[in-house]
Length: 546
Image 1: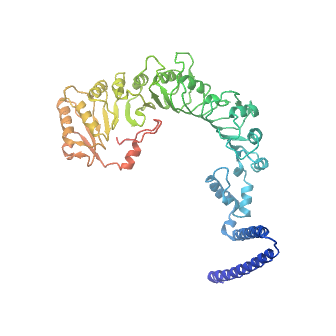
Image 2: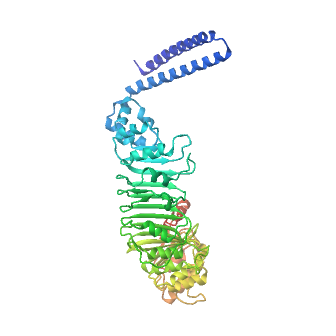
């Protein structure tokens, strides 16, 4: 029988069935309503009948779907392949939801039920009958637990809906995520609940702990033994969080505000195995910045972000940190706007002494200020976002410190005034390469500083060999004057990079003045701005066409 004939036969049979079903339902309704004594009874009975019909139809359709699924090719797949498919489906769903693929057919459902990995996510609060069922299905493997006190629908106490189940699961938990707000049915603090139910308990398999709790209650401190903990995330006041063993911690992330350098030092104490650390401090606090013998050693550290702190606080912090030279470090400083310190320490007193360790400086713009990115072939990079009001003077101040910088990069809008630029370049005598991007006015100022015919009449950056002004529009005559003047004084620029179409009227006159002239195509606008987009915390790196 051809598929077309089969389709016609099925359609015909379904039409007969539907017509017969409609006739029977109509007769049934007439029989029911004919026995009624009043309008109220009639309406109630009719509604009940309709509900019963709906349930019957739904069950029939589900039965047909299940029978159809039994004949589909998916039913013939091996259990191992079904398991792989279900894994992909589960990954796309929130952990507290079950994918519809789990109920494709009896076979698929049985594969899901017999796979412990699909039942290792538990959210609290939970119905008391579900908890032992999920534990059984997970075969008591390590589980991920999510806790929230946003539970207005649950009339049980916090001990019943969170405290008791959590205590039952302690020996299984590998990931614990807690979100604690003020919208719950009780005002009890998280620390208070943990101190009452799981204080001094051992979580032997806990590797990842994340707590978001913005309350400042520091009473009833809970202690948790977390010898296997590798990742710790605190959102909110760290002082209101339970005491956590951090001996084997690899990744630490904290987000809070008004922390001082002393607070941060205390947080990092005992984190001797730490590899990655991010401490986002919305605004700096002020603590005791007196010299002390306390030094926190982080010998395994790979990446560090600290921000933001007053300059004095940042200096105090790094005076008490011992980290590998290979670490990738990003920090953010801010003004002491509240006058906590009698003598406000300028930005350069933190960064200046560190410049000598690097050979390349890149200055870029951020919404919060200028970012100074230092790099070297022999050590990890250092990025410092200067959020202070005196940022326009920072380059000259930094250049006054001993340095071995050989490469200097400017983004548009990052140059100081001409006198300050001349002062800075005068101290950067080892510079061999300068790049400037997307800054027409800055380009003219830089050429004025490098041109020995200008009023300052001296050779700045005598070792300068390479100039990269790609993605910058400028008049070719202005650059020609500078190149010719340096050539005549015996300090030629040997290599030049420009962008096609950006030089007015053209770049033909430049080629003969240098040994190598590289002309590159313009970077597409979207790609260019994406490459220069500084991250909000100052940790992003600018990618320039050098």
